[in-house]
Structures are given as structure tokens and as C-alpha cells.
Amino acid sequence: MNYKNGRDVLPPSLLKELQKYIQGDLIYIPKTKEQRAHWGEVSGTRKMLAERNKDICNHYSNGWSVAELERKFHLSSESIRKIIVKAR
Image 1 (cartoon, rainbow, N blue to C red):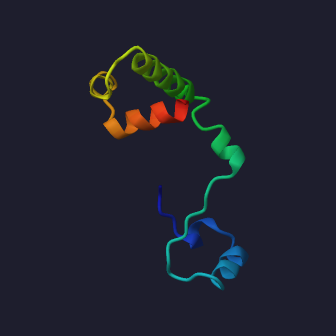
Image 2 (cartoon, rainbow, N blue to C red):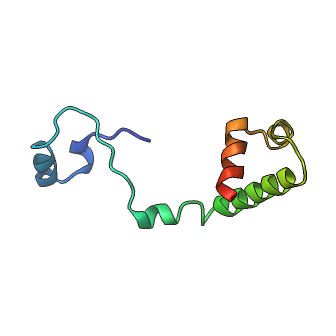
């Protein structure tokens, strides 16, 4: 996440309106649902991660331990468990 000064990126009228609610603090402006939906599609990252997660689940179903999956996929045990639980 990049920090940007509101004066540099917002129209003056919008900046003035926002200053009524918040001044001098950081504010996070989330992406729209449409922007989030397209994450990783152009680069192929989303597809690659889906395939990796499917492989992790298949290996786990075939008796691989979480420790073995950690070593093979270079992920933490917590990440491996999240992938397995999400797939169920």
C-alpha cells in the first residue's frame, strides 16, 4: 500500500469535504468489488495459485503431512492449513 498526500491526488472540493470528517490521519480507501474481482487475471497469478492450492489439497488427500507440504510448496503450516480448510 502506498501513502499519497490527498492534496496531490484529490480534487480540492473533495479534499475539503473529507477534511470535515478526518484531518491529519491516514485513511484507507478500498478498491471496488469490480477492481478486486480482476486481481491476478491478466498476469495469470490467480490461475497459478488456484492450481497450486488444488495440488496441495490433492497431496494432503493422498496422505502427505502438513510438514511435507510446507517443504514442497515453501509455505507456512498456517498457510497450508488455511488452503486445506478453505477447499473443504
